[in-house]
Amino acid sequence: MKVNVMTDILKANDLLARDIREMLSSRRIVSWNIMGSPGSGKTSVLERLIPMLPAEVKAAVVEGDLATSRDAERIAKTGVQSTQINTKGGCHLDAAMVRSALEKIDLDGLRLIFIENVGNLVCPAEFALGETGRIIVSSIAEGDDKPDKYPSMFRTAQLVLLNKIDLLAQTDFKIESFISGMKRINPKADILQVSARNGSGMPELVKWIVNRLL
Image (cartoon, rainbow, N blue to C red; front, side):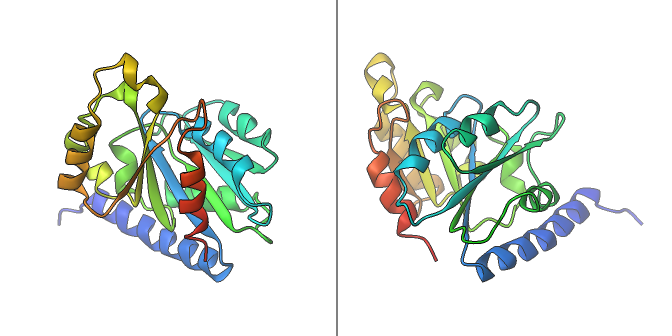
């Protein structure tokens, strides 16, 4: 009898992700799976966002990467709890990795957990992490065709951040083309234009995040 190994792996992952989701929800913690390609600005967005959150909104960050703890160290400078997952070559996080990371975080009083996934526009889409929802960071520098080229990723997002909007004048990026692609792939997703560099659009992002707290 042929065994579909990938199906079994995803099923086991989904069951663990469900347990994580229920545990966090019972604590009234909202978690966001932050995804995007390498260099899209995921960590930079978090660095800019976290200090702008209301004082009563306590947050933590789980950082996923192939190697090094550089991103977690950057996030720790914002004053929040931060822990690093190194996948040692794996192209995505999975629920087991996240569960292990959460064991290193003091969850008491937390309202938000950001899980920054490995930089990749393919693999992370398939693996639930127990998150409340997904935020994709896509930058102006990547081109306006990403929703059409990577539909499985963009189809899963509740929010898409079009980052590095400050570079628009230096590129051939067409915002209308990007938005049209998103409407074809995922018309329900919200889109915000932001710049982690100069803070443009970040107040709107803070409002979007806070409005979805449990």
